[in-house]
Image 1 (tube, one colour):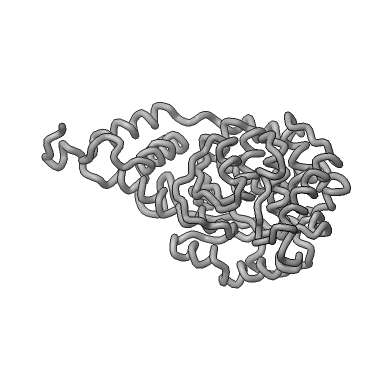
Image 2 (cartoon, rainbow, N blue to C red):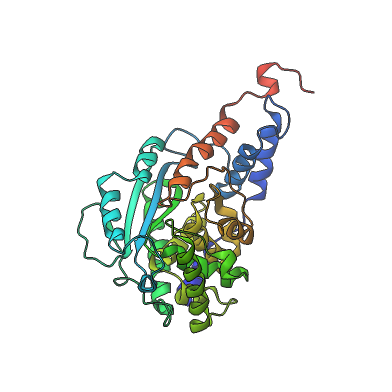
Length: 355
């Protein structure tokens, strides 16, 4: 698709000179070299993304305002009985996000971030002034019987995410997180992982919302049927996304590519968000440089997803909720890293002897 190629062309490599300047600054601070571990790595990477480690005033500079983009969509594969929760939960939880009552709302308020809730394909008519409507259609098709969506629909969803981030960046947002909601989306994400990373459904599929052993085995069997029915081309990530993904997953692919094109850090949440990140990485390898992995989910395939992308999580909290909760929690760590590099005294300024 021409529009996807245009997005790829807008993504540039990290700024090596800015990263070298950040490293020199980090090495001049009153601490042993490298002693702040991942905080230093994050500060250096953010400098490479944005072109500078100097953050400026609060709410300005390279970080600016913060947003977690929670994309929602329903999945036709729920017809196969792969979830512990009914599909009606998707619009109900979207309403909860809009009312400010979900876990991601609580953590976003704590982080001083905005929750942007987007309807990408919920199986309900939703009307709320705070809802961003980018609905492709009411849920994907049952991918156990054929493609979840057409390639054109997948590209349309990617475009929606890309343009959404562009609009937010124009409003001064500079730090983004991915979030999602969609009953059945761990099955779609497991199928994406299985094909793109070349691993079996028994390793890719987890227990999602908390299914029992029998349903877990059934979920693996459904994923095998899905892959057999669609025969996606692992060398064509848009083909894999269209056949096995979801509208909210495709939208998040666009969010990630959009953040990279705007040279903004994008904090990746859990299993579903990481499936979107893997697709984005295969579409545009340079986009990986703009990703920060937040946490390691308890969903069994998450570690394999991060490994396939080449990311390491900042925290291990045994979380498996989704919504963007782990990513928003890590906004604090990203900001802490930038405060360290900007506000900590150097050996010279503090009059401390350097070893």
